[in-house]
Length: 309
Image 1 (tube, rainbow, N blue to C red):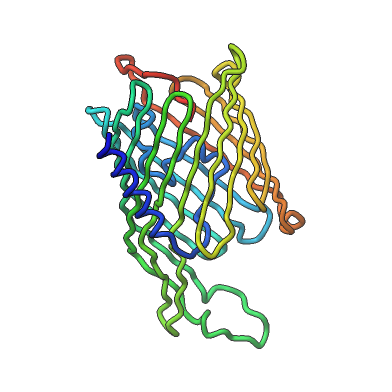
Image 2 (image 1 turned 45 degrees about the vertical axis):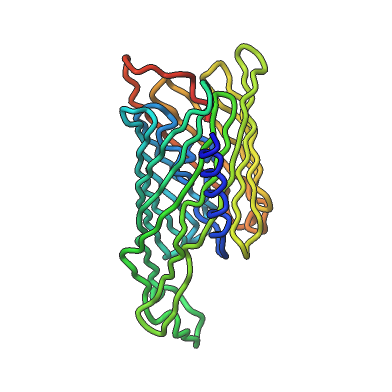
């Protein structure tokens, strides 16, 4: 246990030291059902082979509104202590496009019969493009920055994470991108540092209110030096082990509603709608997010407990 404590402390110190300036990565209202997008240590937690797809459309009705599509795959290996996964995220804002592809690895250490700590590693690359020449400029103005496109095909990155969990609670700590990458145009030495270090900390608990009702409050904080500290708070109720319903609040940005239907042990469908609280609320029609997850559950597979996180 002393070795485990020292390893955990060392990881936290490294992650804290790597924190730097930047802007926010793609965000999800239904993050609680797919922490793999920000934490590689989450892979293998399901105890089954699983796939999650999320489609997020932000500020619908606004020209060039942000859209994010993500695909996540995870599976435990035979040892049950090792999990591997794949993440593919396509993010678009206006003419700016990012495609992120990463492989995830986690190793589980059992702290007790019902509690485990997973250590995670992430490695992958980003393909970024921004067609600056296609942007419309004001009359009689010709900004030299917009005379060339940004098109970088391969930029590697690595990340780390920790995931502490039991059937009743979880804590997640991660730095999914350690390397800061700059996107540079073909002329004029214009560059934009758009891949920056994001520090994520999340947690949640499960409470039994009655035989058919469970309550799950969760939170997630996102920190980038030089940007405002951001946090998400959610409160969800599980009804008869079949239907999640709840709400969320995102600091200085929005509030919304979340619903998920657990069709069976394999298939789940989720939907979230965000109401923007900023001045953009007068120019757009809200934020829509759809999630589908599927698990390959085999009859011979023994699941220790229902999955609530």
